[in-house]
Image (cartoon, rainbow, N blue to C red; front, top):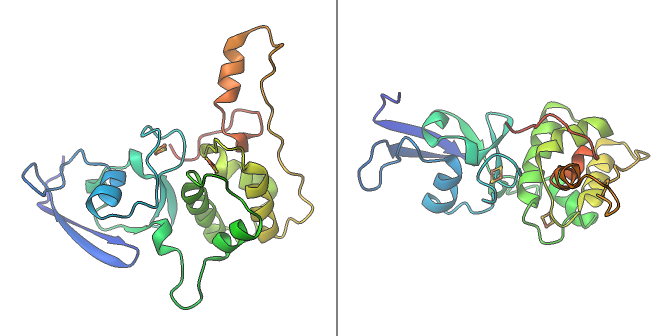
Amino acid sequence: MIKKDCIVLSINGRKFKFSVGTGFGDVSPSETLTHTLRRRLGYTGSKESCDAGACGCCAVIADGEAIASCMALTVEMDGKSITTIEGLEDPIEGLDPIQQAFIDEYSFQCGYCTPGIIMVAKALFMSNPHPTANEISEALSGNYCRCISQYTVLRALNKLAGNENAELATFTRASDEVEDPIPVRQELYLSPYANGHVCAHSLD
Ligand code: FES
Ligand code: FES
């Protein structure tokens, strides 16, 4: 139960104060962080897709941890420091090294999944500057790329981590010859970063 009338969020270094309630302009107790960022503040970099915590497109960093913003209530973010993809570029140094690596390796196609993937990767590199290839894949197991760009995403992140010789994950595609169609469908909906296996969801 939220008892405060106001909440304060730091978003990309700027402080925002919101009144909480059900009146015009208030942040309602059921408003998600995705809604607040995209529709209230115009931070449309984090994408709204499944709206159910399953795809990672809406990921942002809250107090150093990647979270699915569609699964976080804005009122729960009171006092937290949120970073979205818009806040990653340094005004002096320029693009974050992860952003630059994605450009160098052409690590996206339509780009809809890209902000979420970059924010999850950023949280990982903040806590561990040299993650192993497995740690990178595991961290991204809650992200889904519909364009199958994961090969180049993994190449960019492994290069950045110093895993130059890491084998890239292979995407196990469902075969038309498989007899039982239900496992086939389940496999198709797995994150490609999970490398064909069920991984713990990193954004739940
Ligand atoms: S839109 Fe939030 S996880 Fe898919
Ligand atoms: S690049 Fe299109 S969804 Fe990932």
